Image (tube, rainbow, N blue to C red):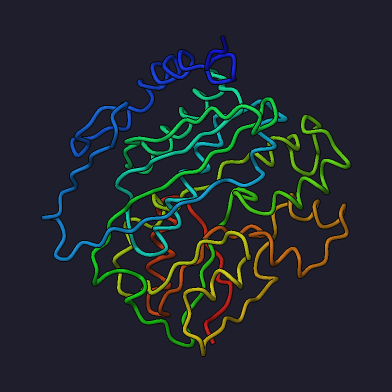
Length: 330
C-alpha cells in the first residue's frame, strides 16, 4: 500500500501551514474582505461609489532568479515584499491603487517555516500598500523542484477612475522624465548579477564599496512607489509612469509613448549605485547590456509637464524623497 504522503504530498503539513499563516494573512484584511482564508474563492467588495467610472486593473508577476539568493542566504521574508511591491508598481503605472492580492507558492516539499516567512513578507507589503491578501495557492509538487527550492508568483487587482488612467493622458514632446531612485536591482537582472558576482564572492562576503554583504545588496527590497506618488497621482501635470523592470529605462518608457515618440536620456544625470558598477566591472559587461537588463538606480520614471516640475519636487522633498531630471520626451 502506498500513501499520498509516501508519494511526496503531505496534506497534514499543508493544513498546519495554513494554520501558521492565518495571523499574517488576516492582519491585511479590511471591511471590504468578505471571506476568511481557506475557502474556494476570496471575495472582496470595494466601495464603487467613490468612483464615477471605476476600472479594475490587474497584474501578475514573479521575482525571477532573485529567489536563488533567498535559497543561498536562507532569508525568505523579503521575497514576498518584493513580489507585492513589484505588482503594486505595475498597476501604479496605469494610475491604479491596489485592492487585493493573491499569491502562488510551489515547492517539491513544503517547508512550513520557509513558507511562513514568505507569507509574512507578503502580508507586510500588503499592509504597507493598503492591499488585502485574500487568497492564494500552495502546491507541493514532489520531484518537480530541487530540495529547498520553491517558486512564487502573485496577482494584484487595483482600481482606477477611468478618466484619470495614465493611458488616457496625453504625453507631448518636451515633457520631462523624472527618475525616482531604486533600492538596488529590484527584481530584474539577477541572472547576470548572480553569474558575475557569485563567481567572485560568496553571498556572506562583506564588500567595502557596498557597505554590506553581497547577499544583503542583492536581497534589497524592491521599493513600492505608491506611498511616494499617491498624493500626486491625479495631478493633471503627471501624464505618464514607467516602472523600470526588465528592458531597462529605455524599453520600459517606450511602452507608454506613441509610436512616433522617443526619449532623450542624459545618462550622466545621476550616480549609479555601486552594486551596478561592481557588476559591470567584474563581469566586463557591455554598457548596452547594463542599460537593457537593469534599472541602473532608477526604479520609476514620472513623465510630467514642465509646469508641474516645482510642485513635484516640493512634494518629494516634503516626504524625504529625491528625484533626478533624466531627460525629455522627443
